[in-house]
Image (cartoon, rainbow over all chains, first blue to last red; front, side, top):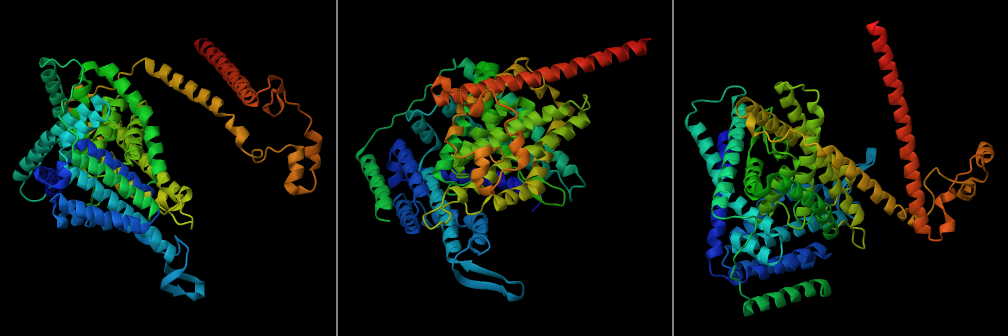
Length: 275
Length: 345
């Protein structure tokens, strides 16, 4: 794939992903029905629990629970599992793999891979090594799955509003909301620039032209961003923006939220007591 | 370079949040001082741009492509504080909306990518710029160098944070609970990828974008007209840090034993050497310190005495350095004047 195509594909997939997330947010499942504040608080507690636990089976238990939650929230299980396990082995898997060997993690030998007695060198999988690698992989998998559950069942705007209700700094929230909007504007602009370039190209680019072109593209984007920010500023000012931030939200606490808190509490308790 | 959740222990994650927060507070103060009402739209738009830059595939020598962060070019053009905030917001959105990079590890990612890169990129470029002498070609090369070094510094910080995990956090059987490799593996592993690929990507993107800006839109560059207060604020920060160190100095009382190689006669004997070297014995009492063992015992409180003796020590040291450099400058100045006189004669 040429560089231009790579970039077009990359930028388009971001838009695609976010449209997909929008679709699942609108489904009427269990997690979608919860108050975003509840989801955020329970999510952070669960994340800490995943981070603190020292037991592998508790991580497996949590993962199965998350799959159940995904099912209850009408998220395609195939998507939920694939989104984690398609990419995880490429990054964390490669990092974790050498840790199973005796040179990095000494321990009881499980399988011997190479044995060169003449130079007294051997390579083997160790019990400690396998455990250490499993810890890393499963912790990352469960954390990422948790984040995906939050992301695909909560609107970005509602998530930000929930953060504001929980006393995160308002200005940061406002900036994040505007940023999110303009990410897509700039994505579109950049994508159009790439497409325009692609449609005018015959044959392969010669020499350093593609690098130079990318530099100019970024420079142009820099300039456009500057102009846009001036425009947004004028628009805000003309609508009476005086540096004070108000964010409206109409969240309400329901019985389902109460059960979500109790459930989270019980799960965390069971992780640290049962396992 | 984004650290996912699960690689860092919760303790390190929270620590990195605590480390990043003061930088972000300082940055938002600096930015709102300069931009006033424009802060919100400018930061929002440039956060969106940094998000976009992180997505780009950048062509590298040898036909491969790599990803850059883009923090260096933003900090050269708009200043380190705007860059720091923009990249931080971009990282927050990446983590919270796209699941790229962890949420507990966000503090660490903000520190490595937003804070270290913006500050390093900006100050390295400013430092090198002196030799550019307004030659745009040199400036472009220096900006690329700054980008290359900045992203590698960020990778170094990431490597160190990861490499500390197995040393600090193990279960009762001594197995690593989080990232499994120590510094000897984590730092080189992080560095190789950045020295070879990501560093070049950052250098390419920084240099090319700056060259375009010089050629077509030099008005974009907000930085470069250095504010006068910068130097004095640097001095203020250094004084604050030295002050903090003085106040933390009673921690030394908690440490058992003496610094390696700073033994007194009794300690040397207790090391099991069996004898005291003759020369040591002869010279040991040659110099009686005015404040032996940092102990102003007449003050009663040992911690206070420790701080006070630290303070006196700092004043004496700074005084000596100032005195010596004053003398050196004076001598150099006189020498220069004499040379000038002899030349004019």
